[in-house]
Amino acid sequence: MRVSFRSVLASTILLFPVLISRPSQALDASSSIKVTPLLKTSSSWDGQQIIYPEGQGEVTSLIIELAADGETGWHEHPVPSFAYILEGDLEIKRRDGSVKILKPGNALAEVVNTYHNGRALNGKPVKLVVFYTSAVGKTLTIAHPEFRLP
Image (cartoon, rainbow, N blue to C red; front, side):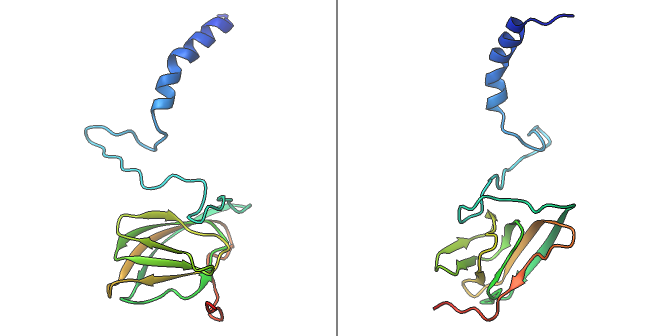
């Protein structure tokens, strides 16, 4: 069967509104499935482009719990990571002094190769789930206990 350029063009024009009106999702919502987008981004919260490391891919998922008024200590991630706040309010401060406040239900793409410190706010603990997208054998976090803000 031979397909003409005109028929391909006509089909494309007719289907284009349908194709662009549906966001890309893992599952489509239905009467038995509720889909709630949390995060879709190509950059971290400080605006840097997300770049995945080369090599055999590896995803690590952790639940991290910070005690009330606790801090993570200054650290950086050499690989992209993504967090979802389950409980508590979290302040993330970068070495340049900029701050991001996250509340339960917030998701973010973490900063990469940037010193930052997380702190639980309001006298309550924080619980978050973090997904690190790395390569086999790569370090996920590098601590910087020597760093202090000027």
